[in-house]
Amino acid sequence: MEDGRLNSTIYDVSRLSGVSTATVSRAFSNPELVREGTRRKVYEAAEVLHYSPNAIAQAMARQRTDRIAFLICKEGATILDEFYAGICDGIMNAANRTDYELMISTAADWDLAANTSKNKQVEGVILGGNAKPELVSELQNRGIAVVLVNNRMAGFDLPCVVSDEYGGVRQALEHLISRGHRNIAMLEEIVRRLDPGRVFLPTSASGPSEFISKTPGQSHDVHGWWQYQGNPEQYRFFGGSDSLFHSEFGCDGMASLASLKRVLPQKALHPVSMRESDVWRFHGDWWCTYRREQTMFGAWKDTEQYIACSQWMQAEGLRYILEANRRRCFRNSGSIIWQLNEPWPNISCTSLLEYHGAAKMAYFWAKAAFRPVHPAFDYTRLDYAPGGLLSGGLAVLRDAPAAGESTLIAQIFDMAGTCLFEEVRSRTRVREGAEEFGALCWQVPESLRGLFLLRLTAHAAGEAHANTYYFSTEADRPYRPALEAAPVLCGTARFSGGTADVEVGNTGCSAALHVCLSDETDSFLLDMEENFFTLLPGETKRLRVGFRRKFRFGFDENTGASAASPVLRAACLSGEAIRLN
Image (cartoon, rainbow, N blue to C red; front, top):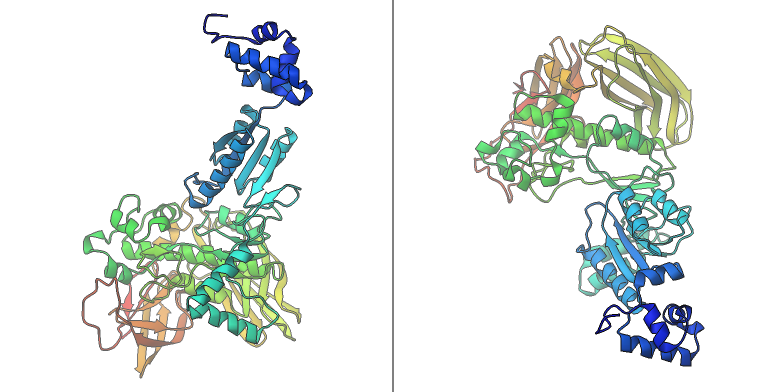
């Protein structure tokens, strides 16, 4: 022991106090086990010697560390987040009051988080966010106590601290109503009057997980995701979901070229990744589909074709989710798309209607997927190599029970319009839901290259509806062959008042994919039952189109005068656009 007693040991305290080293250790680690007089002698000797017990040695002796960990299990979250900052502050205050050392981690990697807890030798772990069951099991197997924050986990009997969502919403409603905001009060009154047995609350995610999960039993009322997950991930993930209610999800896609011209300068109209353009990022940010379109299509000839590719992938991704949820009726109780329209002039986002009102391809595909009678195919990917097997369940999705026979026609075409397969199946059934028609199993011919189309047509309850799926023999950039097609469009439009009777045909030698009707003057919104339809060689589509003048409002760089009447234009993914009048 040196002068100043800065290096005093337990042996020095033992000698000065006249008790054993074991008694000195107990006096600090378990003082209730030592008589008061003995404790006083030990503490006085320690004060004279400036002795402080070694925390690590104490922990080893008691086999306790008095250390807990707070792990925020949410990607991108930090303790500066408004939600977690308050929780972290409360945990820190409680730890200080009880002499616990607190370790905080925001590791998004589950293995890293678990190893961090192990290496720091913690007594317990507080898990905030969407912790994985595997992490909880691993911690429990190590004898580490676990508490969940803002999460409940099926299969684990764990203490949970969760928000009082019902009480919070109720307080918010009462506050808004007291301040004179009548819209929510009006909706609540309508529900009370028309459906008195139902509780009215604005909905949000609830259950063990906020976001849709691959883990069985976790997806109650869930959100997610809002971007196409890739091929085949999109189909494996949502096709295997067991969500009870899918209350917010979407898929991103570009707005039309006309909308881009309204909000972007001319020099910025060329497609670019939003990481490389502040102008594009300002009108899209999260919803950049540039890399996705490169992966699915390769290169495109111009901005209009890039937009058509992007809208196709948005419609494809969204339709699959809607059909997957409807196939599980009534194990899944419904779908709410985020979102119908957009209050900001984004050039890309998840909306079905553009800021200026035009309907995107996803609007029509989603509308079709919600029809009372809708044929559907359950597939797991978009690419099937020559010689491979295209297989999946066939169904007719019905909203209401109906007596009589239902018929489903399945046809497979190549891009030249040659029918490679055709089969008719019939069933008699009266209840609503997914009417199963068995599995489709078709071997892709060895000679087939490029795209091929599966067209399903359902006849049920006096209605007939078709649905077309697009597959490829190529795994790399599967939809690239679609850009090489050479359709030839022709058509006419006959106007009468506020409508036009339109006829569009394809006289070319390959399919015209996603034929879109629009107003070339960009002065009118078009109303029609169908748009973005596919015409095989020799096919014709007739439809009635209504039109109404666009309302000119904010964020509009288009200062040109409005036209007196629309100029109808028909365009498809590849090939030349035409005027119909």
